Structures are given as C-alpha cells and as structure tokens.
Length: 313
Image (cartoon, rainbow, N blue to C red; front, side, top):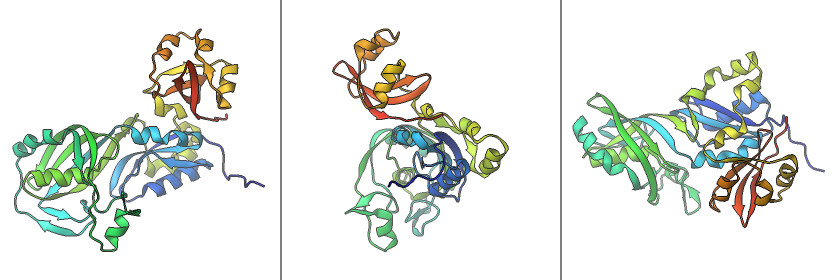
C-alpha cells in the first residue's frame, strides 16, 4: 500500500528575499512548513553569504523549476581588490595578495571583454562534479581542485560604483551556469591584481524580481496574519514569456491524460495561426479556464503534452 504524502496539495510560487546567513535549503523548509505543503523546491541555489531573490515552488510549480533555473539572472556584486581567497568569496582563506588597485577608468575599459559567450572556470568550492564528486567536497578534504572550463553567457556587465580604492560594485545579467565568484576573480586578474566577492545579491531570476519578493524575515508572520494563499503567485507566473493557447473541457481532459490534441480541433481559437508557427522544440502553455493544464509542443499537426500539471482548487 502506497504511503500518503504528508501536507496539503498547495501549488504556486513564493518569491523570497533571502537574507545573508540562511541556506537555500533552510528557506525552502521554512516556506514549506508555513504552507504545510506536500512538496517544495527552489529555483536556483543562493549561497549562505548571498542575499536576494529565491523563487520557491510548491506542489505542481515544482514541475516548472527547470524554466526558472534556465532563465536569465541579474546580480549586484562587490569585488574586494588586493586579496585572493580559496573560495573566491569572503568565507575563504587568503591565498594571495596584491598592492595594485585598479582605477574606475581601468575597470570600465576591460568589462566588454567579459560580455557575450565566455569561458569560465568554476570556483574550487562549487557544486560542479569532478570524477563523480562535488568540487567543494574535494576542496574541503585538501585536494587540489581545478574544475573544467565551461562556456557561459554574460548579457550585460556594468560598473555601478567604486565606494573606495579597495572595492568596486557591479551589476551583471547572465545565463544559466554562470558563477559570479569566478567573474569577480577573473576581472581582478585581468586588471593585474587579485580579488574576491565581498557582497553578492540576486535581484532577478527568470520572470521574478525584487518587486514581487517577500522578506524571509517577515514571511512567517505574514502568512499567519493573512491567508497563506495571498503570499503565493500562480503556477503560471513562471511562464509569462511563452505563448498560451486555450483548450475546451474535452481537449483539456485529453491533455491531462497525456494525449495529444489535433491542431485542426484548435482552429477556432483566435491564436491558431500563431500556434501553427511554433517550432517543434518550442514550449507553449495549454490552458483551460485560466489555469495551466500542460506545457506542450507542436509535433506532426498535433499539440502534444510535454509536462502535465494536476492543479487542484
């Protein structure tokens, strides 16, 4: 006999502003407990020393975490010049020092070299795997760790301010897999010095930003004052950048059971022509009564479910 999952079938997104000093796992546990949710997960880890936007998916929203993790992210970060650390952030041990301090003009002159597709070596203390083991586990055990270089995409990189000669603050918009700690380290090296990330904040990830975030410090009290559902964004909030198409009740039932729907049967929908133009790899939202039924793809004249959601009231 199957074991009944504990908690309620709550679905949606809680967009948390995580403070420094709290792990992403701890934040997920707090939110899951507040909603008494059966299932929860986050849309991209933030280190304990980082603050900012942590999307937490509950219930059926966990099926869409991949969309958020694959989305663009924006960070504000400060590089402290003159010290290299083994973790590339303030938590590590000093491994090298330099007396050189770059000027604002020097910094601005090299930033274009870090925009576009670039090669980046992840920090030794990172979650990447080396011979099946996490790099941070090997590094903590004292092993010499050199992760393989990877291609990442930097869409924009801007110098915001230089509050003193020892530090500079930047904003970066980047793609999946980018390590800001590596970016800060590499900028310092390019400028003829060394450096580490002394402050890091994620200000946006996928469609979520600071405007829709709730401070984790206030979260527990907020959900007890107001109905918890008022602190949740709908499951569909993670998909505002892809087309949506309506299904009638019969079509929605087919889709919920994993069956494709003929495009001919959707011809009455005003967006039918746009649906026909979707590439085979493109995902679209199949909707019924304003709720997401499935992520789907157009294949061989049919709308085929790629990921079915089972939302309950």
